[in-house]
Length: 304
Length: 292
Figure 1 (cartoon, rainbow over the protein chains, first blue to last red):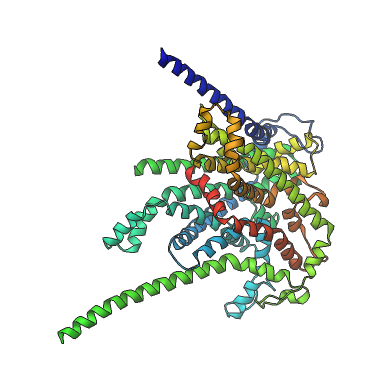
Figure 2 (cartoon, rainbow over the protein chains, first blue to last red; figure 1 turned 135 degrees about the vertical axis):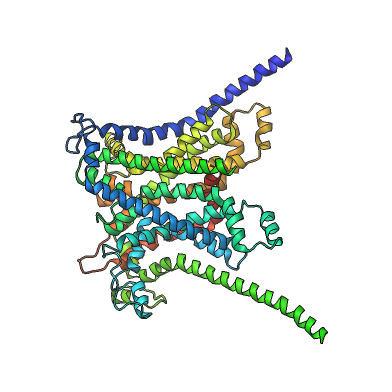
């Protein structure tokens, strides 16, 4: 009898708690519905229409034609190839560099705190500013980098880093590595600090050489942290817009899928076509997410 | 004789060991300096260049000279000062709105038990990976319908798409870490959840709110794509776009001096705050990711 009363009381408390929880969540969820899910749904809807900006309320349905039009556009495939090249190379470089710096910061060296603070700077300044600062440093005539290279006798005359079409993608990747390596360092460092010291100490006592300790202890234990960091960075790189846009505008050498979609929408004023391109971007990013999360899951399942 | 050999043995071994340790240490310090140079030099060079005008700008002298020409010109330029004001309003409002929404949501997600919590967390995580461009056509329509096109209100609205998931995620991980004992007595006394949140947790959340708010503010302050697309006229521009659009008065003039000065003006105050809140920012940035 008493047990039943208590049970009933508890279930009422639980119900009250659940109601309170949804009330507390409601404002944030409504906001997300309004600024994320509704616009996304409208984008999907518009991609089946021939809407334009001249008269956005007057449009007709044209089925899959926008999607096939985009798929038939050579520029779209070029933009996709650029985006994938950029993503794979810059994330790979950031991971290696980030891992190296994180390992260094995990040691007790003088000035560790200063480096840890300094590393936040590239992360905290706007991409536009980073792009402009590097553009200035890489300037063909007055840039400090060409100047240094000439003084060192490595080159005869200044290299037009950002104007040379075959170099500009490399420059974009180089700057992106500078901007986002701090994020990698912080995530990998947090992962490193989760590894119990005893494991390393036991291996040191047993006389295991450092490279072997790194390869068979540190790296496997870091895998979850690196996996999450890579996931975040890949999804971020796949939607990159500002760095390419500020450095090279609409140059085909660095055009990403986001720039391509924005051009359809803003430059050509085509809502339907732009929406279809945006939807393709969404699917490309979603595919990347599913692939990486799947790999991480598989990884976790087999290592256990 | 044997004694001498034994002696050299015992002395040589530690000294070799010490030498190796010293070499290792020197190598690490050198690597540390290299990292410091790599991360700091570009920003240092931006500051140095911002204080040089005329032909001085093209000098490769690494030591700074002081010349306020660009700063004076920029602060007298109504477009630039207006851009700073716009950015302050946009980033400030977005941050404030997100913090209010996220504090309530984080209390529910970090403290209360209910069916569907995992689904909500997953939904919020999914929104944070939405490419901005994918919601842009729909957002365009929404912004026009609300009459916000070419007004900074459009940005306050649009930026919620990344500040809300981010602040909810980070604040939830902060709220989870507070000891449970805090509100147990209050629950026993029959306190409402609203009172527990506002009277017990909120007073303790000051530092968490400050660091999360700073991160959200930086995200909004730095945003470029929406700001470029939803704002047409110069007087409504935000800082990143204004810097992106600075150009010389002729094709042959290099506007890098003013650009560097503008970059320093809009980043230095934030960098000082970032350095002050350094530890909390790092834990805010990593907490969500590692636990998620």
